Image (cartoon, rainbow over all chains, first blue to last red; front, side, top):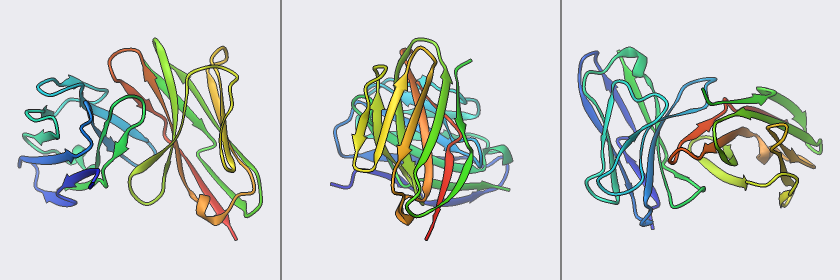
Length: 110
Length: 111
């Protein structure tokens, strides 16, 4: 039982490049979330999904897109990376109030 | 705009001390308040509170919610160096699964 896994763990992008972060969970959870964490700002919700095939915007969705084609996977896409998107990205899943977090992806955009 | 504020932002204590961490919030359609502990990487769940005045307890950690005054506290008694972490407070609004996190309190426990 791996819990929540994230791929990749680290990535460096140049401005304007695109990439996709993959989140996978093996707990059969309905809800999945993408957060970013910046120093002194806690976690901010980017997008979330309440079930397969559904997505919704969180607090800071601009510049990101998501897809939930399979229940166990939640993808976060950056179409044209900007330095402001340098952050640590956490994926989480859950069935109610308790969220289980992945180990994070550290993304640097130069 | 939904907002969660935590205080203090950082705290340094010695082993054996008792600490109180504060979380206040303003959200539409409050549903629950959650506390997480974040050490090096992913946050881990501590407590979920939905009702005022009912203390949740786990070992040396306890938490209580005041829905009238819109705040919660997290108490840690007899602190240990292993309690060193960032403690995050999050509030769930009734609008979908929208969670708003505070900036966290960085607790350092010195031997």
